[in-house]
Amino acid sequence: MFYVEGKVQPHCEFCRKPFKKNDLVYTDTMFTQIQHAKCFIYKPEFIKDKGTYEEIVNKYTEYKKSFIVSEKPITELMVVSSLRKEK
Ligand SMILES: [Zn+2]
Image 1 (tube, rainbow, N blue to C red):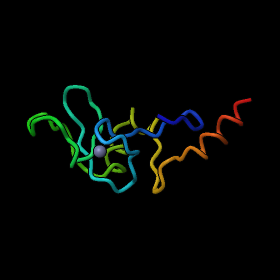
Image 2 (cartoon, protein in one colour):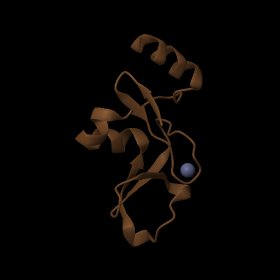
Image 3 (tube, rainbow, N blue to C red):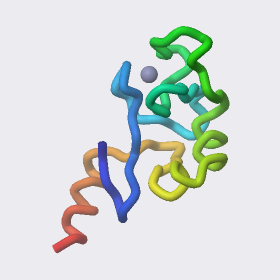
């Protein structure tokens, strides 16, 4: 995960790609993780919620507080600049 100004850019546990604003995602009832709809590894009965990444993040305060929602997920270049800021 990348950290920028106290927020994190979460990625899909399965394909390891960072979530983009309009990615279709599911959350699961066991670990409340976000995964791409196409990557969801559990049975359909474990789907807690579905929507675009942006919708899901805005719906849950916990996610909204800490997750970055962006068209362009955080790149390593941006991490470098955020690390520099912490000094
Ligand atoms: Zn994925």
